[in-house]
Image 1 (spheres, rainbow, N blue to C red):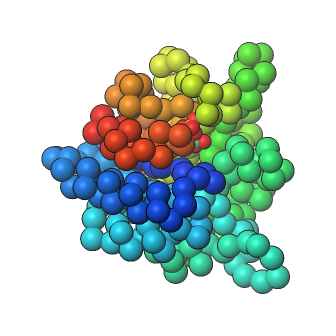
Image 2: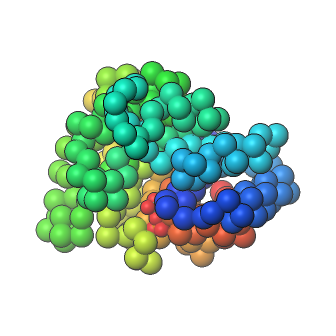
Image 3: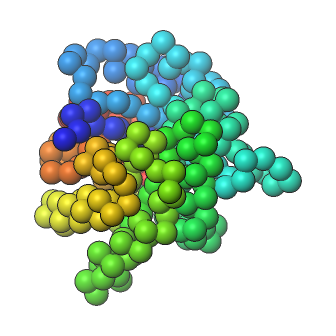
Length: 249
Ligand code: PGA
């Protein structure tokens, strides 16, 4: 049973320095005002903004994460950022295998597993994303798809402390559509059961839901069994909205 919910904001390719300062300082204030916190907040800004975010949240309860890392530790990979660099810049988490990278950058699950392993070795918690396409859900194949993604994307180095799973149905990301409460409940239970074969203390692995989470639906989603937090895109770009989602824990 996981008592502390994880509230992760994925800014994607949004925000300049001035927006970052306003948003992050606003969140620091809001989080400080929330009494009896039952959540841990993680902000995942674009890589160049990580040092600034880290500086602003340093004396608060907010943590910082990257949105991606390279699968190799270092070397000739122009334009890429290593897990060790993220750690060095103040990150504790990194998202790997987001569906936008799986789709737009042709990232396959084996690469995602390598990225997660490199993240673990650098001392980061890897947030491994999985999710089915709309056609896969419509044809009833969502569990098969997720089982394969989990099997191929989780490296042997994974344990309950260094790994978080984020279930994000691809058709719910940025669309305003969310999976129904029953579908989320069934999928999260399925993921929990599947994790038993992959990890020793699988009951203690946080499983997040992502896909059009907003202040309006956050409370309901956060109270579904086996939902240990949320991965939020659009609604993490406004301090009030993201703060309200955290308050819904
Ligand atoms: P969304 O994005 O909240 O804008 O749907 C979620 C995500 O991509 O992680």
